[in-house]
Image (tube, rainbow, N blue to C red; front, top):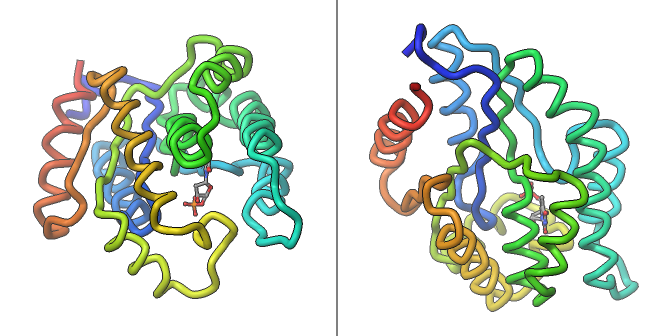
Length: 212
Ligand code: TMP
């Protein structure tokens, strides 16, 4: 794997709350680092000081009703900053970037969850990213009831985690629509299997996808 691994890959991990993104992000990182690769871990919304401030704006529960369009634009504002200041420079240096969420989350949450039009999201994606997209996206699939039960155990809920279960079913559908649009980019893993099974699948598929 060491000699033939492609350089400067952009890998993203997606899934609804409670799907186990953090554990599996760390697992992917350890596989790459054991292969002698340099990895930059990041997240969305966030990843730079300014984008982290936008994250705080987006996640904080508030009395005021939040416009879905404002939410969408803030996601892409944070992404523009993140992409320009952190992701692209690292990739240009040949460093692999591993991100906890990216634009598929916008299609899933603002498109699927909030019901905003796919076309509007697509237009913003083009404006902010042109043709830039992840080389590989791991989608961890979990039943929304099981995912939310796990997320609720973690403590105070952010603005998204306070949404009803139906919202998360729509988010999951949004993710599956993305997979159908670009199946070659996704690795969809059943996150309800044992961690051992999940990680065996990830290791196998990662090796196959990333070696040229
Ligand atoms: P998390 O990174 O801790 O999962 O929290 C980020 C939250 O933001 C999560 O509920 C998903 C949501 N989100 C969107 O709604 N749209 C997006 O484009 C991104 C990146 C995240």
